[in-house]
Image (cartoon, rainbow, N blue to C red; front, side, top):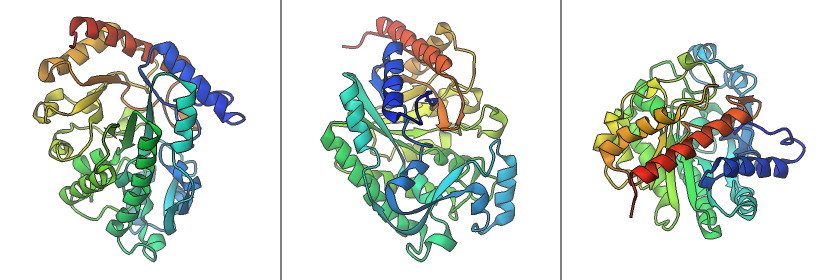
Length: 359
C-alpha cells in the first residue's frame, strides 16, 4: 500500500489507517499494508544480524560483471542510489521477529482474517549473496540457502503458532529466471546479483527452498506470489511473458495458493493455468495497481470468468496484480485509487459469488 501521511511519525496509526481502508473496501483478508517496511524485502536488514544495506550504485563495486550490472541500472526506471539491497556480510541470525510482532498488532486491530507477506527464500538467497562480500561466511549461494531456510522457517512456525491465517512468500524473481536466463539483461534489481546456473537448476533450487521452509506446516494458508516487477508505472521496463515455463515448478511446490498477476497484457493468456494441478488455489491478479484508471466491474468479472471456465469457481481469490507500493518513497498508486480498485474487486467478488454459489 502507499504510505499514509502519519507513517514516519506514527507507524501504528499508519497500520490502523491501512486496515481501515481495506475494511472500508470490503476486503475479506487484510494485511497491515506493510507500513513499517521500507520495501518488500530489504526491511529484514534491521531484524537480522549479518546483513548490510547497500544501494545499487554501491553494489557496482562488488558484482562480478560490472558492465552487465551497469546496463541493468541504465535500463531501470529507478534511481540507483535510492534503492537498497540487503547483502550478507556475516553469519545471518534472526535478531528479532521478521513479522511476528507486526502480525500481533494486526491481529489485535481487526476481526477479519489476516495475511502476512514475507520475502521468499529464493529471492533472499539470490539477492543477498554477493560473492566478494558473502563467500567468507557462505562459500556458495546454496550454502547460504540453508541459513535462509532456517531463518524463514523459524518465522513461519512462529506465525503459525500465533494464529496467522495466511502467510505469503514473495518470489518475483522466478519470472526473471524462467523468461530470460542467466546471460540476459535483467529487469529486476536483485536478479543479476548471483545467478550462475541454468534456469532449470535455479528453479529447482527455488522449489527445494520453499518446500523446506513450509514442510509440515498445516492449518495455515500458504501462498507464493510471483509477478513481473512493480516498481515503475512504465510497463516498458517491466518484464513480459507467460507463466508457462514456471508451471512444472509451481506443481512441485507445497503451497496452498499461487498468487499471480493477470491484469495486464504483459501476462499473456490464461492458458498456462490449464495444466496446473487442480488442488492449487489461484490468487488472481485482476486489477493493475500501477494505473490511475479503475477497471470497470464488467472488465474484472469477465476476466475472472475466463478462469472460472477453465478451473471452476472454487479456490479463486481476487487480488490486485501486486502491491500498491513497492518502495516507501516511490508508491505506484495513491490512497484514493487503491481504495477504488479494492472496492471494485469486492464488488466483482459479490457478483461472482451470486453467479457461482459454492456449497
